[in-house]
Length: 144
Length: 143
View 1 (cartoon, rainbow over the protein chains, first blue to last red):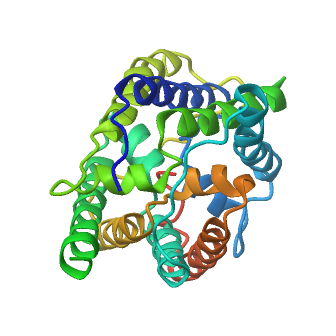
View 2: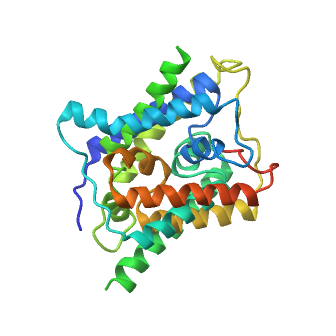
View 3: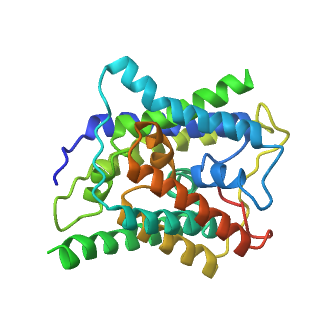
């Protein structure tokens, strides 16, 4: 299905994500990578010292949608076209891959590129490429 | 103060994901669908974020230490290893398949879709599995 091209709200939303990353860097000296923040809270070798701040950050993520609904009166647009089995596999791959590759869209894609990290740029090119190919296969080869 | 700023940071991230459309898997998959219903919005999300982080990081790092920590925990590695590339390639396949990456999935959890619940559950399992596989010397450098 088509979605509307939203350059202005996407740019503004992106700026809020950037602001969050700058805050994390200024306060804790850390990269605001969501996969890293979540994974550090998990066994084995959970980061106990960083746990309270991690929980507070994730809590902030979790209250964003309820606050959005309360303030705008609208439920955010969301269409999840993948079925249960596909989402289960997708979750496994995203979780495993982001920890193995030390980052996801936020840590490598936003923060890493901003720092000019060659590793993050290579990671971003790699995951963009496999994601493009995956969507091409599911929509134009399997789905056609 | 520290807790409030961390909360604001998480809230700002989540709100940014919702406002930008990145919390909508259909929009993510359309960005990735160059030869179909292409929606270039996500390039603007990344652009908007980097427009803030690039000067922001530069300013912050003029300080010798962060406000609430005794040092910057910056990734120091510069080499390319198989783990970085294989992990990122795996991540990309999952991202394309579901249209979710970790931030949007966690942010979408309160919206209560079954699909989001399934994705989060297996994502956490995948993370735990990878932590068992990855050795401590290479784990937790970028993120």
